[in-house]
Image 1 (cartoon, rainbow, N blue to C red):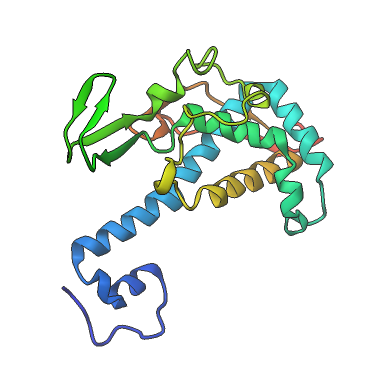
Image 2 (cartoon, rainbow, N blue to C red):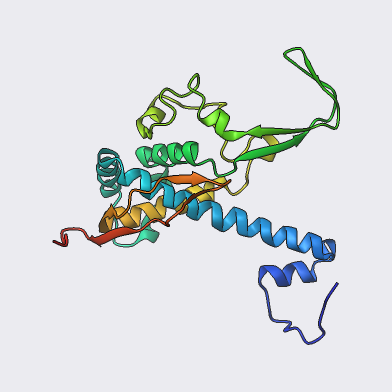
Length: 229
């Protein structure tokens, strides 16, 4: 692989770590690690935040209720928000759950059978790659009433659902799921406590495979109490 003796020994970013770690000493492994971190830590979270802004903008009632809840935990500094206060923001958690349900951070899950599996009379041989389509679960009307409707209130009655798997499940559950949720909550809290906003265009989000907006997500934003004419 390509290395240089003149590389700055003080560098300590992700790429430098991969280059220095002997267990990742191949170009394909390094590319896989870097792309994986970018995908998991950047694209997923920012796409979910954008989708939440869009869905809340389309549902003023949910936006008002979320702002009222945030006001109950309002502090001078975001850093003063405690873990208990974050976990007690129940409607915020519901908004995040519903956004993830509609947004499908991970559109598919790949698994390989370790032994022959008998599923409803069908034999799946050992070593078969099984692909689970998450949208088929998240938009299943037998699991979620009116599945295409943004309804964060549905999560007030749902404590746990085996049909909701934006972060995977079991031993392969995403270890960064909680930090992703915290990032989403902190961004929404700062935005909604300090600003009013409105959607400038009514373009629909599309999945290809990650959720994105074909024309971006332009919004008109202004400090609370200072609406522009």
